[in-house]
Structures are given as structure tokens and as C-alpha cells.
Length: 208
Ligand SMILES: CC(C)(COP(=O)(O)OP(=O)(O)OC[C@H]1O[C@@H](n2cnc3c(N)ncnc32)[C@H](O)[C@@H]1OP(=O)(O)O)[C@@H](O)C(=O)NCCC(=O)NCCS
Image (tube, rainbow, N blue to C red):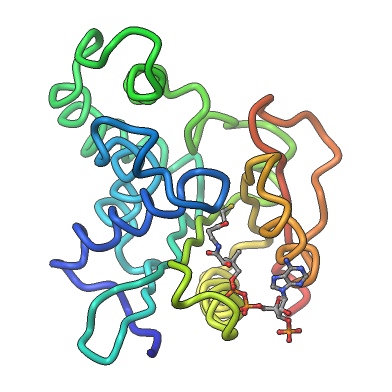
């Protein structure tokens, strides 16, 4: 396995990684009728808006089995996604298209009401001090071998080189393993208001 930059054509495999790690770090496949909904929310926007900041872990045959995705300026990312990404996704997943009471229905709602997606905390102290944000997910076969650390380091370097002072991320309250990983890598928990769903962790990028 090795790390390389994202390339067009990786999308389907990366959407699959998103689904198979989407249940607090575990496989969400059986929890959704439409497996593409998770990737539509938390993977594809980054490949469309900030492809330069996407890196992937690939097997020897070049199949992607993990990624880190980033946005250098969350507010600008949110605005760009409103222009070039969300209208088409909303059209593909109209309100009422998922069964009532299902997880699919909740995700379709999130697609249409983007108050919890990236860029929604514009003007907050969090986005002033830690304007960048990231998502990282590795399939089980890629976990525990140092790829998570290397992907975070690679993205942190890219963000710092482009002048970002800090990065934040959201993690499910149930995902204790990822929380311990972020703490081990030097992220600290944000003590300001959170988004009410995930826990927020931050890392200063200005100190190198
Ligand atoms: C969480 C995740 C990104 C970590 O990546 P990883 O490749 O498994 O972790 P690494 O092997 O790179 O570990 C890096 C370091 O963190 C440490 N670490 C990893 N998990 C840890 C844990 N749960 N507790 C304490 N330390 C941990 C490792 O020991 C290693 O330490 P070292 O570099 O000082 O020797 C990965 O396991 C994953 O994608 N899990 C499923 C999806 C997920 O939960 N994503 C996050 C959603 S917010």
C-alpha cells in the first residue's frame, strides 16, 4: 500500500470507503438503502471543490482503500459548494425520496438543510482560528499501519504551506477510537460551542 494524490476516477471507490467507515468508524452499509448518501455529504464535495487537497491510500493494484480530504478555508469551501455542488445533489435526492423514519431520510434532509455541513459556522471563533477542516477514513485493511498519521501530516503540511493557521474536524461522539487517535496526534478538543452533533477537535498549524 502507498499514499498518492487523488485522481479523477477514484470517486466511486472513495464513496465506498466513506460508506464502509460511516457508522462511527464502522461499516454503515446495512444501515442505508441508498449507500451513496454518505459519500454525497462527506466525500464527494471535497473531490469536486478541493481536489488538490485529497490524498488516498491505494493497494498495489491502485485500488483506493482510504483518504484524507480537506478544505483550506471552510467558509469559502461552503460558498463554492453552494455554487457548483449542492444544487445537482439536491436534484438527485429530492425531499420525500427516502422512506419516512429511515436514516436515508435524515441524510436527504441534511443534503437540503446544510446548516450542519462545512462552511456553516462562518464568522465563528472556531473558523477564525482554525479555518481549515478535514475528513479521514481508512478501510480496516489500511488501519493501524501508520497511514492515518501520514495522511494527517501530509494534509497539515499542504495547509500550512498555503498559509492556514489551523484545522478543525468533527468526530462522532461514539467513535472513541478516532478520538484517541486525534488526541495522540496532538489535536485538542475545542472548548467553544460545538455543532450539537459531533465533537470538535482542533490543531494549530502555525507552529510547524
Ligand atoms: C481513525 C483512523 C483514521 C486512524 O488511522 P490509522 O491508520 O489506523 O492510525 P495510525 O496507524 O496512523 O496511527 C497513528 C498513531 O496513532 C496511534 N493511535 C491510533 N489509534 C489510536 C487509538 N485508538 N488510541 C491511541 N493511539 C492511537 C497509533 O498508535 C500511532 O502512534 P505512533 O505513530 O505514535 O506510533 C483509522 O483507523 C480509520 O480510518 N478508522 C475508521 C474510520 C474513522 O473512524 N475515521 C475517523 C472519522 S472522524
